[in-house]
Image 1 (tube, rainbow, N blue to C red):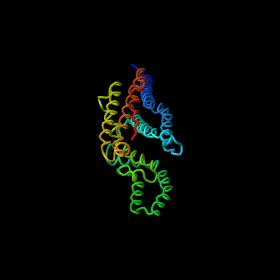
Image 2: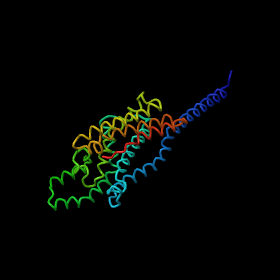
Image 3: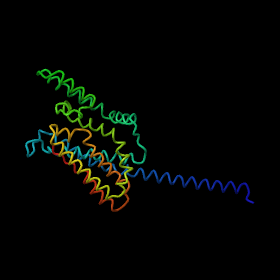
Image 4: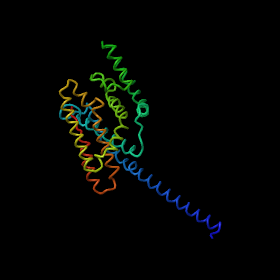
Length: 281
């Protein structure tokens, strides 16, 4: 019959083994979940390229062949790259946890996102106010000036199909307005993409990107027949959900197949399809 000391030693040994085993599982799981977060830092280079594309497209003082800015049409492609990367990163950073989809949580997420850049937005808005005052001094409508200011302060300008509104004051801030809508729908997109059985294989994910690309092309063809075609295709927030979904699809492809050798070839095709949102409207 084993002694008290032997039983205690056996119990301690079992407990130690269990703790080690459990710790190993936790560590392995943590490393597995942290892997994508570590690797996606390399996407900063792609962000830099997209930024230069957007920046140079607004440098009207550097004339290009067409007479406009040097890379006049590159800005639209740069915006698309930003949006696809946004969908990609939101999926990679949220696939392993349940994202809140309630109305209160969704708006809380939007406010959290806005708090990061709103002070800078407000600063650039204040810098543009002298131009708005000059507009009124030269005989412009005070009501128009007030409406432009109101929509810019609330970051709702991208919802108005009037160029003088969505490109008013700090014109590029329309992107922030659209971005907030994408932040609102992001939990639904990430959840839907993560649960979809149609995206379980790399080939199906690539095909999904192709379908999304075709769907947006169809939307563009329909929108071009409308009076506010530029707004419908380029600025209207729901129209940019295509790129957000495409980025999330590539994000799932990356998460689930990053350790497979074939992934790198297939992801190149999927990522290429996602990033080919070259808009020229």
